[in-house]
Image (spheres, rainbow, N blue to C red):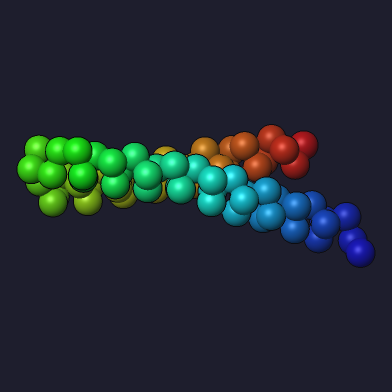
Length: 70
């Protein structure tokens, strides 16, 4: 198996596992806020926050996976 293919597979595996863990925590925090303070945030702000969190998580995952690959 070529080394490049092995490295890519390792990068993808590390990234998806890390993303799964972080997104699970982000979802838990979002659900807690929705239950604890249901009327404090509008739908637009909640949607915007969810998008920002998701993009941030994936950027973090790509950085950490890239470091793990090195």
